[in-house]
Amino acid sequence: MKRIFLVRHGETDWNREGRFQGQMDIPLNRTGLGQAQAVAEALKDVPLDRIVASPLSRTRETARPLAELTGLPVEMNDGLVEIGHGLWEGRTAGEVEAEWPGMLAAWHGHPELLTMPGGENLADVRDRAWPAFLRTVEGEGDSVVIVSHDAVLKVLLCRIFDSPLSSFWRFQLANGSITILELGRHGWRVPLMGEAGHLGSVFRRVEQTAL
View 1: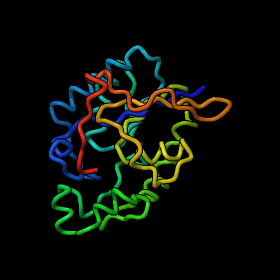
View 2: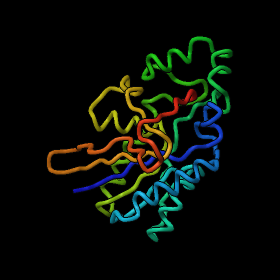
View 3: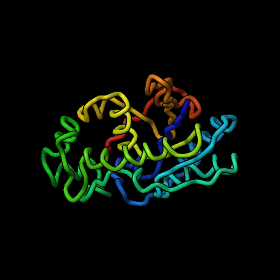
């Protein structure tokens, strides 16, 4: 049986400020670095074979403490990079609404239909992230950690659950959360989703405005 641990990167200042990050290379803040260490502590006793991450610094920094504890290298996979928010990157939700009236509502109401100005849509993310995910699953090792981004992980979960991309907003994954996927004879199952107990109270969730 294959076990895949999906980890969302730790917090950045732009997460806290409610700015769209996309493919801008924003590092973890102090809270995010603490979350990365908590992820490593949560997984340190799990027999792991590989660690794979998006090449952006916030995912690499999230993977680093676990790599140091396990002695495993962090493999980079470009297919796991965050959705390109295009011209929205660096802007808050309020700034986006002011410059592109109605588009933010469309993004939250029908995310499967929206292509961000100068950026990607969810189908674009699916078409690169799902093959990247499958290549990772089909590669060496039965226990693999994948450190990626909010939109990428939600798109992967839509595919795992055979749900349309319109289901995108039904998934909530906190910074530093862990989701477990298992692949057995009868296909995929999800025994744990968005686990954040290692970060503190599992019942407290901060709503992020720029996703």
